[in-house]
Length: 294
Image (cartoon, rainbow, N blue to C red):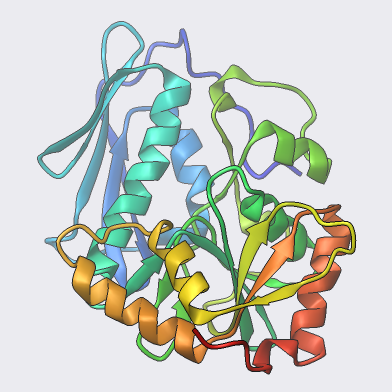
């Protein structure tokens, strides 16, 4: 079953009046407004985050249609894109959701560029640059019985607990093919196809991080190797969201995180093997083994 159904947007006259719905993650609520039929795609993809209402002063995200079938975006009064074709507007709207939640969460906590998964209350954060395969692995693990906590954004508090950010998994075409989910190509999803995690498995509301898993290139022996806190911190500092203006505070929070939670490198290989390696990190207790200091 598709994470969301395919809707044709380009070349279809959009509704002049935007439609609004409410969403929330990590206790942060926001409204999203968009004209149909793009609204249908966005709202269905974000259905796992939908709530009945949000506080009156919650951030307002707006997608508006132009007469030439392009779209403008703004977050509050700040422009977030202009004259974008439908497939770019869809991607930009989901990115706007990320930045809205990240900027509010980072005022008091740390927002990692990571996917987070839960196994019986023990959590792993999958960290890596865009294109390293963390979203594809998160989708495979969710389908394999892990609880889905978040994609793209790990909302980690001072107790190293990651909170739910149930935005859709942003799967590129290669990831869709690896997972066996892609049936036919739709130009609306040229950038990513948003796939609701709830169609793949169960959602988890929070998890205590027991391991930071950094995606790395393939190795001959498939070995999962420990990382020092210093190396983990350096990697995480290049994978942040929403830290503008609070860089010093975020640095200190991440420093405490890497000293409290072990970090490992996970080499990229076939998805079933990588999911088994994640299982091993939890089941064998390797996530609790001390790693070299430095």
